[in-house]
Image (cartoon, rainbow, N blue to C red; front, side, top):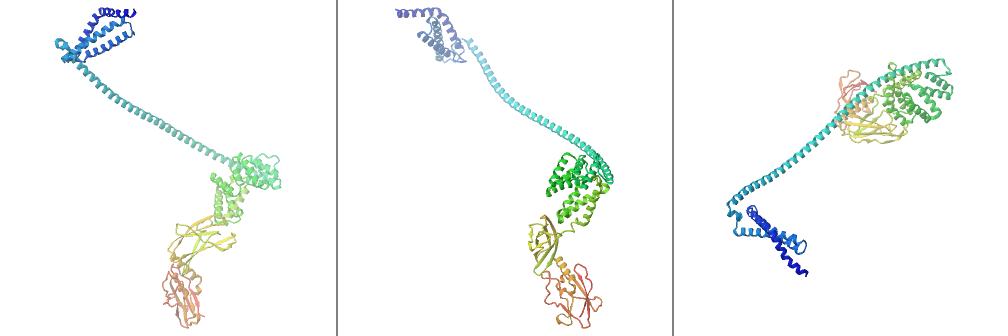
Length: 604
């Protein structure tokens, strides 16, 4: 019953919907079809409408069948969609059949065709506008790219400007720093000048103060006796000396310490105090006491005496450092000289003597214009230092003359070659030599004898060279008794000059053998064999018989440097004389231009 009612109601609903909706739906569908026909030149709108309306009709019908919507409400839409699909589909079918690009109405009504042409112009304009817009878009994109590039360049320029600005700031800071440094240096120089002036004034005050103390000390020394209640530095120093000489070392020590409390920059009170401390407490005790005084006070004399309490090499190193820091502190040079003295070392090397002489010379040079007085309270101590200095300088002689104390070579030529004898200005423990200005040195070795001065084997003082050795330089160096290397000394060697000088020396030394009468029973013959053997030093020989003038020349063969002592086989080393010849006088002129004394020989 229910299904039959429903099936009968459906046609009635459709009829009711058509009666209500059909009129306006058909009218709208017809108008839509006409508009789509007129707009056909632009696009196939009739086909679009027919397709869209058909799809809508199918969807609505399915929804009604499936009861997704109420039929009463959905039927008007279904009627409208169906009408639109039918009208638009019919229009599109007729356009295809007639192959009308402009639509059916434009072919029947000229006014509509004109309207379509206007629409085409507008479309063309619209197309041009679209093209223009597209080109404009491209231009905008290019402009954007250009703008981006410009922006990038601008950023780079801005970054560069920032860097330049930063560099400018850094440069400005650097300039300001340099300016500040310059100002600081200028201020420092002003302060240095002020300090120098103040130091000069202080030095003058100290000198005046020490002069006053010295005068007071001299007066007290003349009076004798200890001061009961000392207050001034000269009084404490005076008491220290009085107690020390009397053997009261405790009070002497207290007085020296009290004097040191005034920080007087005079050398002699502290050297005497140091001597007392070394006797009582040893060198370590003296070093400790003066170390404490040096830390508290400013006087250079205290610091110098503190340096002198160290041992050996450490003391010398510290003393050298003190002199480098205070090159005008005169007493330091006297104390430095003592480090190289014979009293300190026992035996001196040439280097020790030179170091002692240099230091003493420097110390004595400050005596001019009273330059040493400001360092001494007790002037008798200064006088003693000066006397010792002058005495030692006199004993050292010209030790500072480098040419006076240099090794020498004595070449001696034999038929086999050269024997070179080395003469040194001081004992040595090793000797070495080299040929030329470069290359390694060769040790001469040791002899099988001990040197009593060194207690070590004597170094060999000679070496050999071949006879083919050309003129050159020979370097000599040696180790002194303390193992310190001295040299090298470059000595010029000229074989020709050495041969002549060696021969001349032998001729002068053994002149009594120049001439021999009637040798080995050869009566009436005068032999001059020795002069022939050493003829390389002889330029010419003149002689006379029986005291007459030197009017005769004695012939000599030329010098053979390769075999200088051989007498040519075709040369006779003698000549004949009559029995009346009782004497002969000879004079030799050497190759260096000098002449020997006239030598007289008596015939026996």
